[in-house]
Length: 125
Image (cartoon, rainbow, N blue to C red; front, side, top):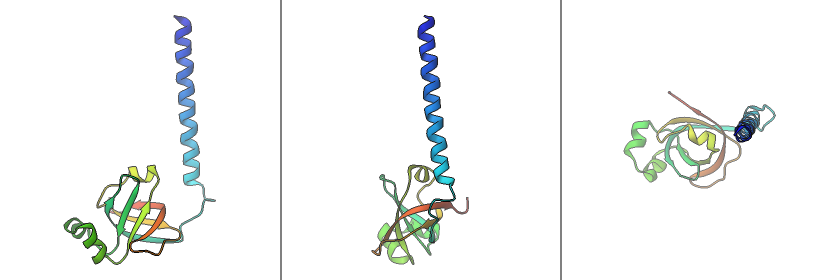
């Protein structure tokens, strides 16, 4: 019985160590100042969210306007509409109709535009 509990204890410590290592490596790369910084920012409302980690941000709309409009109407009425791909960590902190400020690098010239969110900040929490 003593050997079984020792193995369980060792496995538990190993799993915790692996989890802690993964967490600290992730934090390092998120907070590392040598990582590429955003070249532009878009402020707007999240009007659509996909299961695959993409959000549609439309600027120059209030939250109330965004809630009253369909996705296509919001794209047509807003100034800029952009699909952003997010990391799992970024996605877990957001909800539909949040006001956000998204930092990005280059955007694909399409309608709506497309890009990757480098930073994302919730406004009016």
